[in-house]
Length: 118
Length: 107
Image (cartoon, rainbow over all chains, first blue to last red; front, side, top):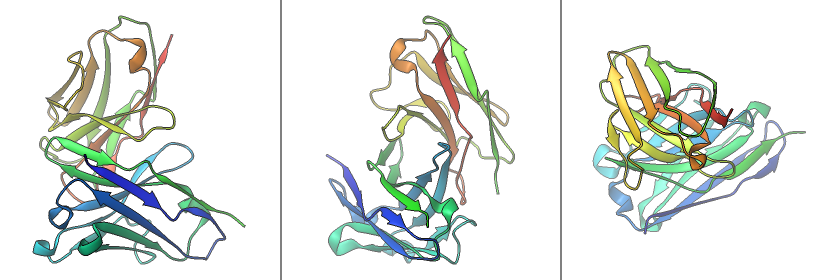
């Protein structure tokens, strides 16, 4: 069974940092292209970042809204993907989901809440 | 960036109705279009992939179609369990973009 479990969310002040972790199981993580997607309190879904596999040189891609502030990374030995979030803004407040899509399947974690507020 | 314009934002309907939600892509995305259903407090669930293919476990009353740059999700006969939010996603190229969502609710 495929599982994705996000941790690391919480309340943080503007300008601070936070690191999210997505621990996975049930599939060959080392071959998987992984994504982070977030959902604002207004319920808008926004793709945040992607990291490809080692065979693709771990290429990374970012939404313009987070470029230069967020970093996606992975540890294949731990079947985990991470999202380092720096210089957080109030508009980064959202539920953050880790996702994996392959062919006709799309797997999402349960999500983790990040609240940026003073 | 590819923009996905989704309509309507809200869709009041009755049980048994045939309903259609549409997304229009601002650039060619081929068939790289997915539809998701989301219920309160839950993660999005894949309903349609490749614009027209039913995802595993999805009831056959759901279908997807394409006409040019317009992509549609149709529910042939609405059931109470279908009341949810629906989103389209273009997965052709980064940055991947979602539609703004459609809230399907009972009339």
